Image (tube, rainbow, N blue to C red):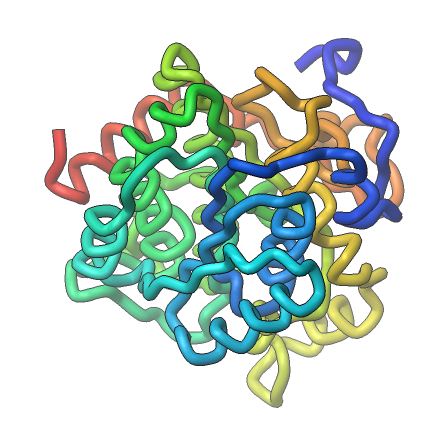
Length: 319
């Protein structure tokens, strides 16, 4: 990536969701936010609702999300806040959600995720759980919503990744840890690389349908995502990193997602990876500074993106 071709905006790591969406009118637009029951998902949903969008919280815990939806209505005055069940580890749940969706979809924020499961867990299909939830679940969801996104005329997909992607490419020879020892961080990193590759290939395949996809590193925010990084089982070195990390607020953490979802500054932009409200610099370059990690070449590799798309279709038994 040529540093001169980077997409930049007036915003930065200190910007909030409200600041990046100020002046944007989403009246008549429809959005889905996965994992909207807490953390940056809830804040992303609130900001989109405040701009006038109809927002569906796609969640595992419907009861908790109904409380979040009520809070969003109280804070924004927007009554078009819906809650629908979605378990990204359950293909039947994903199919039920997509089959129930009717009408166009303008914004899809694939926000839900899990991080660094201490022990290897598998879905009934035998898939490693982090890859299954973080990538495959959202992949199946987005495939099922393709026609709704195309019907919007101009639709945006926001795929929430992580700086952790830098640590591992997708290991195509053993994605699901059948032959290599399980490591919670390599599994997490691989899944987050897959998310970026998805944005690259989705844009390539679907731009002609008016659909663009971008990946985002929201930044470090203390949320339920880190629930497995506490306790005596955690490596002391990892615990020290988390104890001393420059955490940002939820409002700041949601800013890059909201920017990609709604700002006119990003119209027509796709297949890229953003952090701190700007397209990321190449990982390891001299220009990367502060808490930036940049984007690894393996996450933007078009051949890997196409290979992952086909591998994902094969896993789902689709053509």
